[in-house]
Amino acid sequence: MRIDKYLKVSRLIKRRTVAKDICEGEKIQLNGKTAKPSADVKSGDKITIEIGNHILEVQVLSTPNSVKANEAHLLYDVIRDEKRTIAEDQF
Image (cartoon, rainbow, N blue to C red):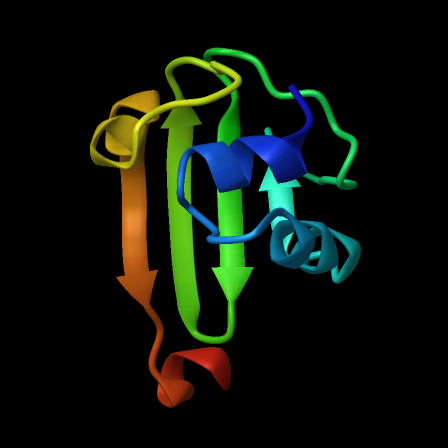
């Protein structure tokens, strides 16, 4: 599954067009490498989303084409969810 679609299906990002734009802005990494919107995602992959001062890292558990909103959190495990302060960015 494409990473932009996965981000939308998993509800990590609300809209696929926004996910595409964020990928093109080099804010998404797949297994440690900058991901293009068409990058292929499979179970076991690690996705890192870095927007502003917020970093979210997840491990992909499954990649179904659709899922109910209340089950979307079952598609991934959160590895890291942190907000950096301005002082941390300066070092």
